[in-house]
Length: 122
Image 1 (tube, one colour):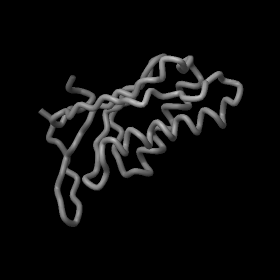
Image 2 (cartoon, rainbow, N blue to C red):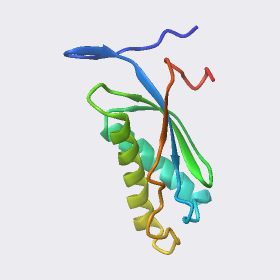
Image 3 (cartoon, one colour):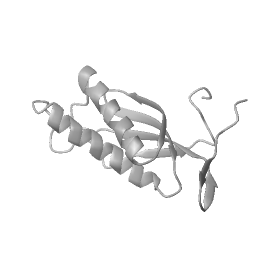
Image 4 (cartoon, helix red, strand yellow):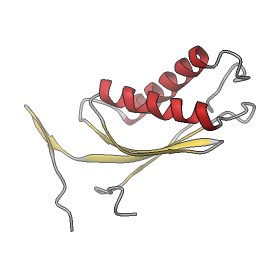
């Protein structure tokens, strides 16, 4: 079994991993190929800005899955919102002709704590 690395901050020690599912709005056309690749890169960039470790990421036509280790100063909802916003912003800049509609994302997300899940353990 792999020993989990702990995040050490001045006032805490933690290891919070969360599996996020971020669904697209039913009215959106979802993402395809090049758009999906760019969206995944936007998530990786945002994770770095938020001091998160993005352990796993995958996307499908109607939703994203992220396995992310979250620092104690961030909220799960804040991470989900930031990821959605980063992808939406990037897509509107990179693919102005894509019919994203008014709202790309569903206002919901699903989060599961993972008890230290890693990409190797599923």
